Length: 108
Image 1 (cartoon, rainbow, N blue to C red):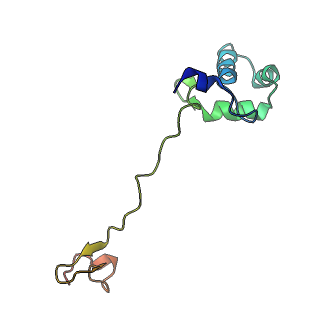
Image 2: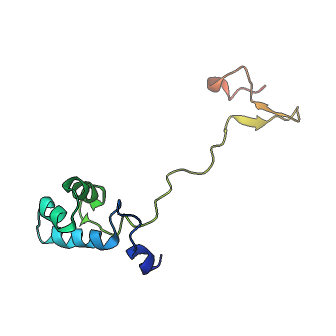
């Protein structure tokens, strides 16, 4: 990501990178959340949520974590693992269709 793209404010609704850096600087100086909110003309709740969401237990507040692209949590499209091709037929069907999930190891 280009630095210019990170520095541009997406919307007034969201904190910009410069605001996040200012939060990190003021937080490292021991400034209260109320004072940080006043300095940035933001709600104390906004500052509190930002610090909570982007803090590491050991490293503390990380201002660049929020500007990174979101991590993908899924593993791709869902596949149905219980469908298998059956040797005696050309169509797909469940293995031992009437057996249910507990008896899949049985042969048809």
